[in-house]
Image 1 (cartoon, rainbow, N blue to C red):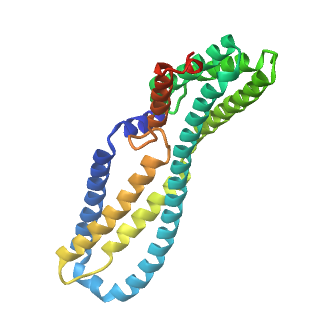
Image 2: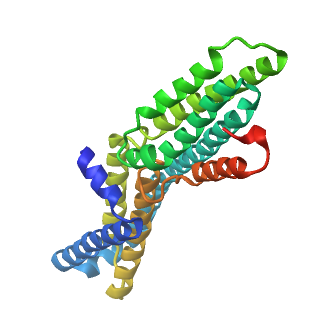
Image 3: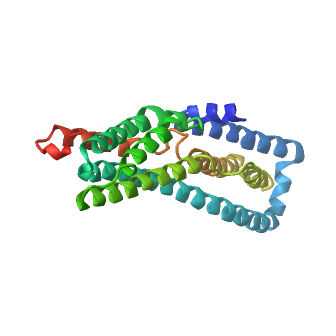
Length: 273
C-alpha cells in the first residue's frame, strides 16, 4: 500500500487527474451504454420523476460528506503551510537572538540554524515526499539547544539572549514535531471507501434516467463523473501536505537561508557567525 501511494504521488497532478477522469468516464459511459442497450433505454423515461427525487436525496447526502472532507483537508493543508512559515521564522529568530550569546555559543547556534535550514531543503523535504523524515534534524536542534542552554550567563545581556534563543529553539522543535505529524495524517482508508461507494452510486443513478437524445444524456453523465473525479483527485493530492507535487514547498526555508547569507555578507560585525 505504501509503495502504491508513493507511486501515485510521483505522478504529476494533471496527469493523475487526466488518467482518473479517463477511467471514470470509461466506467460511467460504458456502464450507461450497457444498461440502456440491454434494458431498453426508452423505458427509463417513465421513471425520471421518481428517479430525480431519489437522486436529489442521494446526491445531497454525498455532496455534504464530500464537501465536509474537502474543507477539512483544505484546512489541514493550509495549517501545514502556515506551520512551515512559523517554523522557518523561529529558526531565523533564533539566529538573530543569538547575537547576545558569548562568541562560541553564538557561533554554534548560528551554524546549527543555517545547517538546519539547508537540511530542510536538501534532506528532510525529499524524505517527507515518502512520509519519512531526516533524523539529523533532531541532532542539529539538540546541539543548538545544548549550546544555548548549557552556559551560565555573565551579565543581563547574555541572560536575555539565552532566554530568547531558547524560546525560539523550543518553538522550532515543537513546530517541527507538528509538521511531521501533519504529514502522517490524511483521509483514512474507510473514509475513502465511503467516498468511492458514494461516487459509484451517484454515477450509476445517472444510468437510470431516460432522455430522448441519448447523446445529451451521455454528456450529462460525463459531466457528473468529471466533477466527482476531479474533487476526489484534489482530496488525494492535498490530504498529505508534503507528499504530492502540490505539497508545501521549501520557499520559507530558502528565504531564511538567503536572509542569513545576506546578514553575513553585510557590514554589521554582530551579524557574523
